[in-house]
Image (cartoon, rainbow, N blue to C red; front, side, top):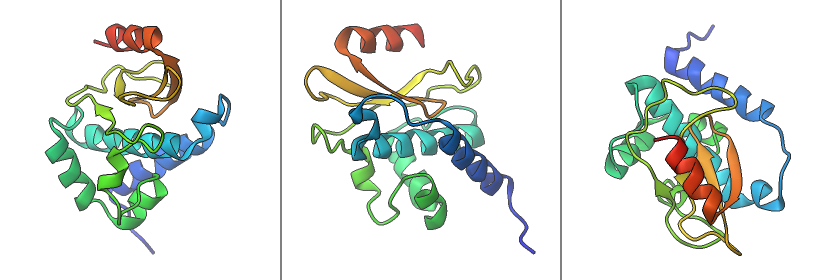
Length: 151
């Protein structure tokens, strides 16, 4: 019989949330970049759940990802053999903008702060990830609105 640590249980809960999140939205929300960004947001939430807020820096976030079991990363959309690639958008070929140190105290299924987004995006729209692991595909004005709302 397996004994799961709290962290393993949290990871399984996160997988369940991902399955229940739904598949609606534009093709961009079904893209490999969206999957990558969702994985990044999920692991951001994993870090924040353990520490009380998001990672303070990219260096600390990468260290965290390298400490997580490979199967847990895979279950949450992160390739354990390509952690560095997790930080790059396949759509615009640029690093994601990650907002470090974001708190998770006030998240819900419908409201959460932005934790990462595409730097440039495609055709004037960017993928955005929230601390509750939900994604959106927004224009520049909406991006500024959701970032300002969550500060």
